[in-house]
Amino acid sequence: MSAGMTRDWSALPSVNSLWEATAEPARDFPVLSGEQQADVVIIGAGYTGLSAAHHIAGDGLSPIVLEANRPGWGASGRNGGVITAKFRLSFREIDAAHGRAMAKRMYEIAHESTDMVEELVSEFGITGANLTRTGQVKAAHNETTLKAAIDEANWMTREMGSAEVRILDKNGVREETGSDIFVGGVLNPGSGGIHPLNYLRGLADGIARRGVPIFQESPVVKLRRENGGIVAETPQGAVRAKQAIIATNSYSDLTGATAHMQCTLIPFRSAMVATEQLPRNLAGKLMPTGRTYTETKRMMRWFRMVDNRVIFGGRGAFGKQDSQAAFDALRRAMVGIFPDLADVPLEYKWSGLVAMTLDSVPHIGRIDERTLVSMGYNGAGVATSSLMGRYLAAFVRGEMPDVGLLDIKRMKPIPFYPLREPAVRMVAGWYQFLDAIGQ
Image (tube, rainbow, N blue to C red; front, side, top):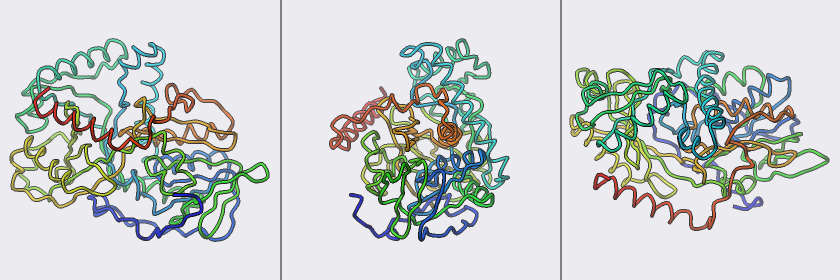
């Protein structure tokens, strides 16, 4: 979409998610009208944008947040609510490719990110976020992937000091999950779960109460330079600022003002389903420890128990809208792990876009003297994006924080960008085939 085109923003589809159905009431924010002044204009009211606004305001500067829809409409309100101290690229892979110092720095950033979520929940008193830090189990579906998971865990203990990592045998994973299909697994501490939309709305409400202006249904349709500053134009108004932050992630192509960032990302649709509330005896049998869980297949599935419901998600959905075929595939996978759910109806089905990058890590930094960016969270964005707000504030102050591999200068454009969708389908199809034959 070019900068001069308009669209019907009220026609953007709603999200039929468990989070939307169980969230606390959303605060109603105004639509930008007329002209406003700010030190920093932030495009996107997700975790990145709101955390950045909070930290920038804490420095005594004046941010303004502009959201194309309503806060939480994008990935921040659609995700699975899983908090992990990791990146899609493993620390062992980072060590092999970039050295021990870089691996340790990335390890520090990952753990700082989970602590940041806890810090923000505490600071703003977001009780509805229901934050837990009970850990995550990686459940292995065969002996090969179990060995790989154990080797990785032992390396993490030996080289990164993750002394609390625990190896689980088949019985241990059965006790954790209530499922008999896994051969063993690894329990990683520090990870957890959250109600992602309540977390987002709590941030937005808390930041607004502290005087930070947030405008909804105010898409930035043009971003231009003027008199040594930057102007963000919306259909009904404009913000004049000294600097701008683009925090739109996989939804960067909603307008032409940020669409140029999309060529660095591969949007990958992630789908989720949630059962109706289970009978107490069944709910007590499945995932009784309240942790989050992933499996070791290439087309990774994840699952957790929330309010006596099983939430089950994974990647592999295609297209720009919800896919019934993807939901059906998730249900089959869920019943394969939990046969007791065969006759339990699904009450919610939804999906959202994950922003993948070529090097499997997010990127943050200054793309010119007036514009900063943070995006590309590769499916682990709840914690990382929350932390990136702190680093964006440091960049705004003129500092150069050590962000390791996340440095925007390392970000590479997607080659043959117009072919990205068929390429993703082909790779995902191959992974699904390998998973199906047990490889």
